[in-house]
Length: 380
Image 1: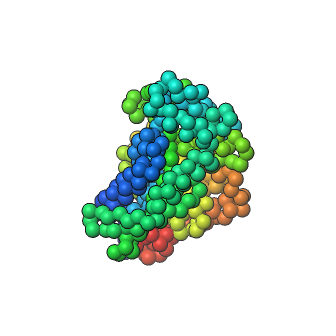
Image 2 (image 1 turned 180 degrees about the vertical axis):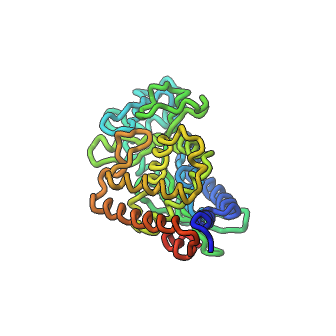
Image 3 (image 1 turned 135 degrees about the horizontal axis):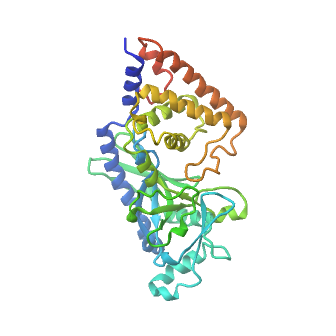
């Protein structure tokens, strides 16, 4: 019979996206997203002027997706002709959020900017701050006018995908169904304004944690994303600072960090049907833990089963305190707003898994099927 570490290594391999699957889905995704964005540009002249391309974020970008890479989180980047004159302000009520203010006039930028300025003036409040609800309505209007639900995309591999558009929270979701084999790909599209610190000044970095010093000058940017953060009036003009590419760099090159993240997510899939413990929360727990071990260069080279137990402890401690500190803004609690009872139930579920894994780790030989049941059905 195999050892505990051998079982954990086998499960980690099973929940990981296989290279051939990643390539297959990625090729189809690239064709589909390009077709969608071309449709949007043909439909709306303002969108055509400010669209700057797609940018992946989330589990797919970080390479911590489980099994089938059939869900893509995508920022579609927007940039104005007069982007250097957009005023970026700190939102003092919400750590890690900013407000974006349109300049008083587009006259000095030439007639090519007038169309964009006039349009976004209608998407701003009386003080010229961009409004989240109006931005979402505008994107929705573009996708509906494009009649995306009547559109098919043919991919080089012979796939033919029928598209269906739905709104879901901050994202604009497109479900793409392959009419030949029934396979589905889901795209969550989120608008994002790229705040380039090399064009603006570093005074526009409003996170509590300092900008990483190792990042090159051409990589000094973040995205301002219209993520809901309350119901009061000011929440409607408050954009979240998102740093997916910085976070990718932070977790890259650390031997067993990503396999540990995948295992934690698989356990979450088993015990948390409502996904209260979001994938991003789990990543932040590990990013915060990494700061504590930063002086121990070989920490992530520890055996995978040992790391899994250590990171389960980190998750359980956070749930016990009802607090996961945002990596970039430690004063912000990611669990704020979740019912205490739900958090307590999650803690108990993770603790039970940890106890079972502890028992297995002390055994010389382990029944693989018994340890397998602790992980989600994504394990095949």
